[in-house]
Amino acid sequence: MAERTASLQVDGKTVIFPVRDGSMGPAVVDIRSLYGDTDLFTFDPGFTSTASCESKITFIDGDEGVLLYRGYPIDQLAENGDFLETAYLLLYGELPTAAQKAEFDYRITRHTMVHEQMARFFQGFRRDAHPMAVMVASVGALSAFYHDSTNIADPVERMVASTRMIAKIPTLAAMAYKYSVGQPFVYPKNDLDYASNFLRMCFAVPCEEYKISPILARALDRIFILHADHEQNASTSTVRLSGSSGANPFACIAAGIASLWGPAHGGANEAVLKMLGEIGSVERIPQFIARAKDKNDPFRLMGFGHRVYKNYDPRAKIMQRTTQEVLKELGVNDPLLEVALELERIALSDDYFIEKKLYPNIDFYSGITLKAMNFPVEMFTVLFALARTVGWIAQWKEMIEDPNAKIGRPRQLYTGEKRRDYVQIAKR
Image 1: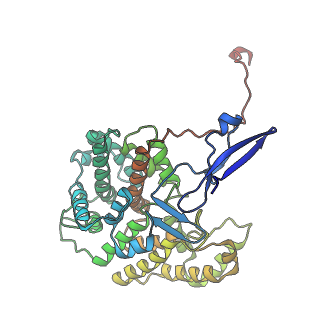
Image 2: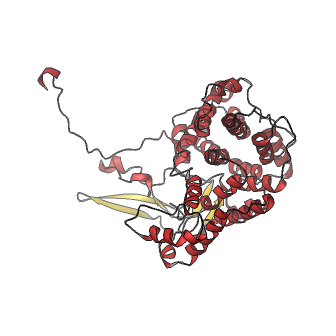
Image 3: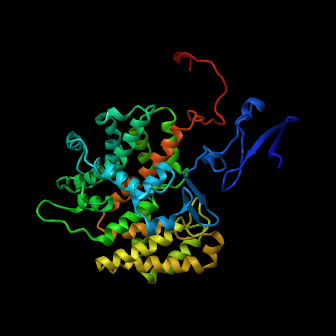
């Protein structure tokens, strides 16, 4: 079969570009020679039609509602595996054998403690500092505490840095929470699994033994799996762009956390919870639905629709069931869940929502679940960052090991003043 090409006519000149096919999803027009051939750039604000890299990690089909990690459907991984198995898959490309899984779990578990001087570092924050501000600073500071694993040219140091971050981010996240509520830090325990260890570090206190609920630990582990990676989103692209300059991995992940902090990205589940609280009861839903349909009303239903998914977010189906399991385990009869379920029912049957493809997404349910587990809303994005760290590291690792990778340098359409000469201040 002949190689496909795309042609562009500019000022009477025809330029030919190769078309490259991926293993799944849309093909791409390779325009790397565009500027050299035509003295033109493309203009694509938000990069909505631009493939910024080649990747083998995550695939999304937004029209069909499909999310694959290394080819495996997200629902199969969430139902059958655990978070560290998913982490191994994202990092190394294959599901681990039993021996590989045991070795990886051991390696992560034995790196969960942070340098004791980090405790004094935390004392520099105000007590009411936002946990995400603390996370940006403390993760970036890891490069000062663990500078023996910042040489990105050394594959062993890259592996050590990756292990350290996956292991220590939960510890830092728990420390951020404990600091915000004025409680002492709780050290990790090596005999606990990843999610159970995090729950204990967050909610245990020295005066009594903390009893871990297997159902809550499994639910949190599933939340981590669902958030582990999501292709080239804003924060992942930030990590890749930071890493393309040769920055150390701790700084790159800190940059990703900062990007995730934005309300249009990682803060969406917090916005959903605030919206459900504003609605308050099932009886008040119709008036808010009417407001959502009114083009002149700024009110928007949070947790519906997605930049990529034009079908039911595959993660939302698993999250809905997880939410119900958590509420049943805790004996919570949350009126917000009743509002959420009725909103979901309307969204799946109302012509307006169907026509605009406004299906519930994962943020719609995750906020309710985390609230029921006693996490304050300020911690929601922190937990998102904890889970997404694995995806960020996998994407960073793939980019560093790509022989064709270049430093990121987006171009622009300049619309400012043309060249002009400096005028001395006395003559202005």
